[in-house]
Length: 206
Image (cartoon, rainbow, N blue to C red):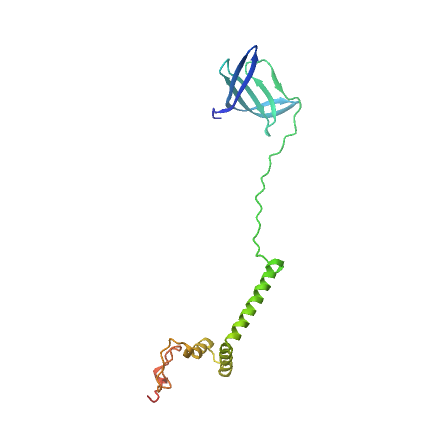
């Protein structure tokens, strides 16, 4: 481990009419590797870390911690001291936590018909549009007559190309379209249709 300050402590002790200030810094953890020790008639592999506490007064104090695989403290030794602390019974080791993958939720399209608030707004908007359309047609009866004429003409002719037929029907209503001459060819080129073969073209009176 890197030697970095990990904890700072300051203690005050009253001695007669004076205060004694003691400051300590805990730093310097050192990895000592793995070792096998005897615990409760069992062999246990432990990981050893040595920790040193330095003080401005006195000598540094070092302790060695023997840790089991799950972090249990099995043994503690203060360097330079004849005594040590060791557990007398082997604990039940905690198994390593399995990190479950994050759940994936499939995106489902919202069923707005089942949402009472959205469905109510939909009905209100639908009724608003219906009333608006009806009001517009009352104000412009020529639109209803124009559409009726087109549908009647369409059903009578029953053309294969409905789009071109509609363009030819509504084309004369375009105010930007140049006016046609009073007398002209009955077979003049139609801007909505492709040019016919020359063999089928016929000229009318000009």
